[in-house]
Image (tube, rainbow, N blue to C red; front, side, top):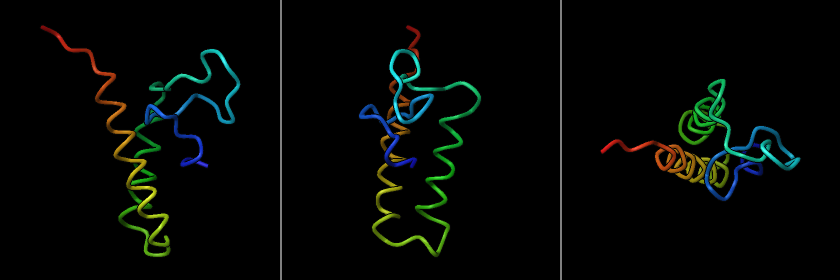
Length: 77
């Protein structure tokens, strides 16, 4: 579910399946994205029962998710 819900931007929408409008945007409220990243990081690194292909998919999702969070940061000059 989490892998399927990840947007091309690397973040996750407010709801999935997508419903349109603001629900499809990256959701930073309520610690949603950090929680998803923690679950996927655990699947990629700490849960022995996760098959290797799923571990790799989870790790890739984490990398894309962290990239999305970093790109969303405001830069002060």
